[in-house]
Image 1 (tube, rainbow over the protein chains, first blue to last red):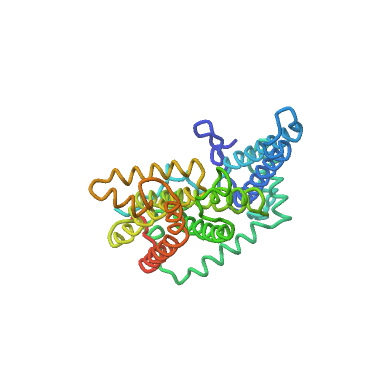
Image 2: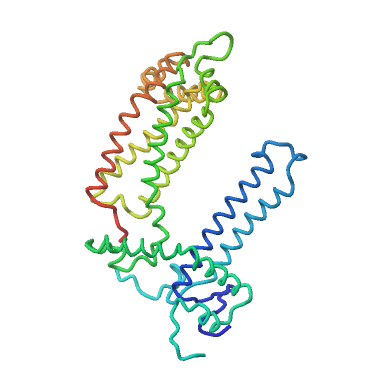
Length: 102
Length: 267
């Protein structure tokens, strides 16, 4: 980890990537996360027949696969937040420029 | 390292120049692999380019002019709440019109205890093809509209969008949120279930508690001091005849004024 491209701020790793790669990360990680979470819920729904069967008749492997898929989507998305591109401040906290609106 | 210039698309060369953890390398490689094959980002960039070309003639917005985007961007999704509630209204109108084919506002008992109104709701929920779906859509649209209208009001308040010259539209908005709540209340009574009935009873008592005009209001809105057939019909006519016309007209004025005045930008 070199000084200029990645610095841990408050325990968070921060990786600076080129703009085009940042776009790739944003678009595909979001796509991935959405598909995983939606797919996960579909699996959980199938395993529990829309939460209508008693606990003993739940299809456990499918239910666990569904929960895993939801978790995987969350992990993929959370992992993507460490990447940012040059000159990208952290939203409102450390914007370098003044608003100039008085 | 070669002398060849590395551009953004030279992912391999770029990646070697950083110290990434193995997981990060795998992550980025996988996403870049997908990107090269699916090219979604390219198409999004074309759309972005198109957006700026379309807006070339437009004057800069306040947020652009004074560089407010970096402080204000997280408000932007909340600027969609007005459209969102309009959309919910349209969905509720369409699903409600379809429900109207099967619902009968009669408080008379068909044979024993259940009323015709309640029976028709049971018919919709149990017998009618897609009836369960249709009533669910109508109900959800109503719930979402109430929530969206309320959040829309909060957004307008906290961004100061109600200020001069938009005071009139704020007042109209208050009328609209009240109409929305009356819409919700009248619709809530229509199934004539226990929940509906006692909500109606509360309505009567609330009307009666108004000083001086209380009895008159209860007569006008509920057709008497106890709930009866005339209460149900009044709620029905309010819900499917009076309110749709009034609310649609007021929404048109509300949106028309926004159209004329433009969206209030942050200062």
